[in-house]
Length: 384
Image 1 (cartoon, rainbow, N blue to C red):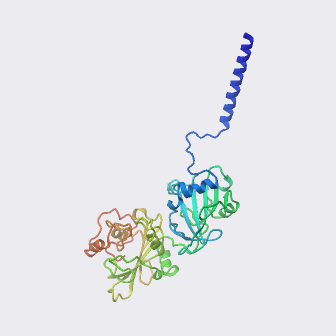
Image 2 (cartoon, rainbow, N blue to C red; image 1 turned 90 degrees about the horizontal axis):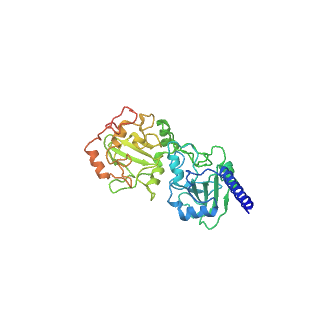
Image 3 (tube, rainbow, N blue to C red; image 1 turned 90 degrees about the vertical axis):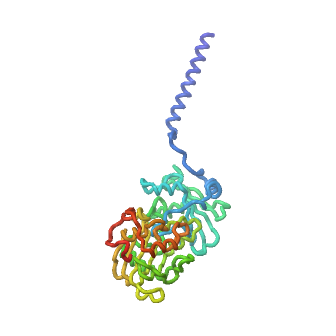
């Protein structure tokens, strides 16, 4: 009996040793996950992804890429095959926060989701939503294709037309010039695909050529009437501008202020042109000067990224350009509306009557906080 106990004990010990050995081998083969946060977002299936962007975290509440010289992602954009004639792009916070980070390396993190709405109409009249096309970065899903999971669904989300490592999506988005398989956005640089003329570089000559020739400013609209000023015609002006002024605003700025989600700050690419005249509103005389504000992403963050330009009325030269101290100091006065003084943006803080009262008294801004830009030889009293 004693002998059998010894045999049984040996068998039990041997079995336990085998189990421990097997557990160690499996642990060595398993991925190390301790301390690594789980990826945000749904599982890598079309059904889960669709449910996530439609119900769990509705994409229509997301923002989009920051506007650049080539596109204003805040609204409808001209599209092209294989997407609709018009598109609208939404991006989740995982991707947006990564791009804004100082150490961003051009590769979006896992959990990034980009939703593109596809329409058959024009940006002005897009019509009904025809389809949704979605990119979702999933760790280890398809390393050869940047780990992007692709999805196409009808506009109402009633079915899944394609999902997974969709060959057509991968081959198209892998074309030369792509940015982590993105074609329409390249993190502030020129994208692989864009439509129409890009906005100019941040230089006086390029900006002047753009507003005079590429996209003549005289064909633009202006700010909506606000009960104090009717911006569709000549307005009484004062120093440092002419006695009479006329203001033109590009579509990038006008489209932005018309959106329900406008937050009171104009997007990059916004351009405001002010004509300066020496005569009266009824008889302004010849155009004496052009003064221009152009918002360029990253140009001068201390003064809301505005690039300033002054030129003679005939556009024959550039008198001042860049971070002009006089312009920044004057337009940076307390309670300005994104450095605008004559027009109060919808979510701005400074009323036009208040602003006009300050200008008419000839008061000038105080404090050196706004004098951060390049000194172009002008002061707040010069007509810029």
